[in-house]
Length: 263
Length: 298
Ligand SMILES: [Fe+2]
Image (cartoon, rainbow over all chains, first blue to last red; front, side):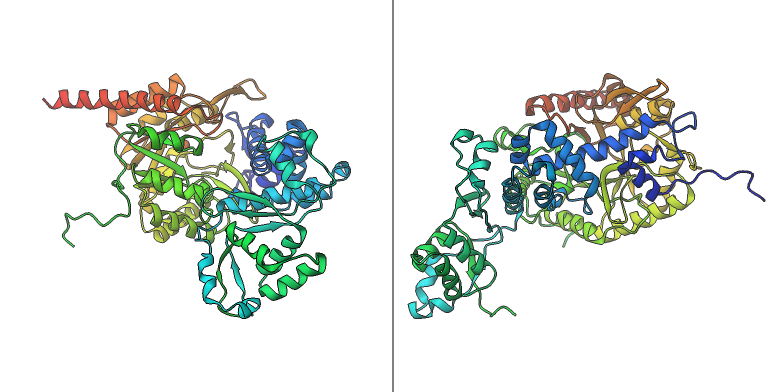
């Protein structure tokens, strides 16, 4: 039997494109009770998608939101969402590209610290959700002869990260996100590379000496203590391995000794 | 193992969700709940909020699960999607199911992912033959991987597909018949969708296949209007349950008896006592239905 007329078949691809690109209008085949398209009805879905993703970004980046204000942040988040939709339904993994998006956003050129602040917030969230793991017990180091210490490799604690920065990123987060301190007290000429740790359930942020940040970065990427100390000494001749290692150990940044050489 | 022995559980309380009210678990309420141990039947969580590897969310959920039965509610599996299910996501659901031993597991008749984009909304599906086959295949896969029955939730919709050839009810009935899945009856979704589609919610509920229903949802909606000035209700979960929805719920329970009943309040989340009061209101309706049952028997 020949078909008299073809019903418009609306595909997920066309539905999805129309969600993200309002200029495409209301897709044919998505109708109200009279069988006709209705833009306000379709806009409920558009709004749900865009607003919920913007809100997810706001929850991940509260400092950026506080610094820019709700209205500016909402517009910025919309611009980001238009370019970057999540690929995964787990939204704690959405928005990793937001820091570099901020860094490359021309209207915000005068605020070059925003990108690093956002990196700190991304790292904070990943630390919050990282795998549970005991921190390394420093007593276990007693079994290693001091002369062998330089050859030791550590495993990074799964919730520990270093965020390198030339800006006072922790002061900016402390004041604007945790409402601790005064905006006027922030000195933009101070560099604050940070160590983020979560020994149990609460995330801690520690400002590091630049040489300690260099050392930690090397240890976390698999260098021996000796190799890491060498890179730290290059930027600070006063660096001492014992002080720096005890700083990382007492903050719970390390999980255990690496028994095998990394491939 | 003797047949009357319960399997060993890691938790201090039973897995089975009772025919009582429950509440959607919100992180901001956990401390209050753990301190006051409110008299409530169960808690329901959005699975996607517990898909991180560790940390505070899992610590809190473990503490809650030790005292209350749990219902695991997925919002991101995209069962109505045109593409195959996301295997990694399904594996994460199965992992949570194993870890927390929920008494109920549910997902939606909706799609949210297409190709590489996750839209973070429960989008409607056309009720046609091709979609029916796909949805049933996906539900078979879910029940297979998770090793349990799932409940499928009726959607809230703002549009209909011109290409649909089934009514929503016939579509749902056909899915349960083919897959053996149960249904989650969201009474607020019924009210929202029927109003938006200019149908009678009472007539829809009269024909709902209650024998498959394992859980009920109640939530708040926001009133609006479409371009043509017709009422357009938004399933916002941002306020108390509407009186019209309470009335429909009362009829359903009066007719079919008590069922696990979840209060959903996901946006503009109120203080815990406000949410608990909503659950108490459901408890009152469940109790009255039970009393009426007893009277009928004696
Ligand atoms: Fe629901």
